[in-house]
Image (cartoon, rainbow, N blue to C red; front, top):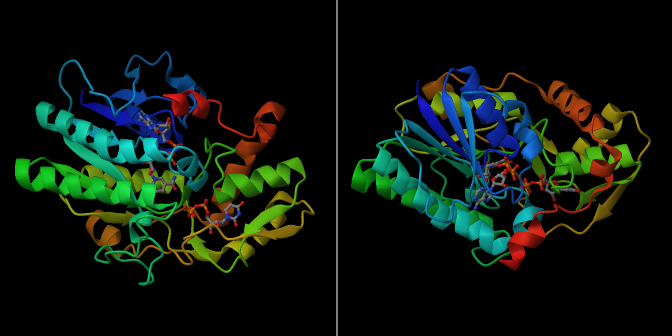
Length: 328
Ligand code: NAD
Ligand code: UDP
């Protein structure tokens, strides 16, 4: 039985990856410190004999007994609101955490895939974004803590690959959504759906002309799975190329939720990328992968999930774990 360590396991993507690898017959070790994750995302795996969970901060030395075949490094705050609240932790998990996991992969002779992001392209001047574009990032802007941590993460991963011959994979993930996102994480989909459910106006930042391209979690997980098992060591974009402006997206959500909410406009956050769309030519060619779930279907499934959340969850404004971690 192949053994895989998944960091960030209690988060949105990490928990779906745990499910996928359990279903593929792997023995999965999940690791998380719950800074933005939630135990609930893994509760269905509690009694699964092929799943083990270790509560641990990956910026501290990581010790795993026995062999490991694969590592997926997904631990990191991922929402702009989260990484503005915990900037140092964001920098540490992308740098020190990645260093620890690369060291672990080297010691265990395991293949490691790291979760990079479309944010390495910053506010892109090339559209759509191809993997050979170097990006346009403000190192000292508020988003720099995430973008530069991820850019460093890619650099150190390639250095381990070149210098130590480590088997590495890099996925550049574009905006992905679906069940188990945190309703209060500030990202646009939970934000709009939460507002619709609470009967609040939808907050569009700026004039709403900025674009994003949203990928359903099932498609994202399939792309990551194929990339891990491929031979390709350079970064690969995985995302859905269907682009939409945030204003049009807000209107779609109003229609989907069948509410009469109004749109209100708020200031555009500093360095908010004005356009984002993955060029997925490489993923199509290398992995024979492309997204299958359209926005309408994906949003319907996601809204259905948010509707099952309790009143308490719906009105909770901040993640309870931030405070403990910030004090450290
Ligand atoms: P998430 O916040 O739901 O999950 C991140 C998980 O990492 C959480 O469970 C959190 O507790 C854990 N974590 C953070 N720091 C840790 C540490 N030091 N030690 C152990 N665990 C730690 O976010 P997500 O959307 O699931 O994102 C997962 C990964 O995918 C991140 O690396 C993110 O940068 C990347 N990514 C996600 C998207 C997206 O659209 N969802 C886009 C680009 C990149
Ligand atoms: N956004 C918005 N209203 C919100 C939350 C986000 O208009 O309540 C916008 C945000 O400014 C950005 C886009 O939606 O242009 C996507 O934001 P998100 O935080 O989901 O992720 P990003 O792609 O910026 O990392």
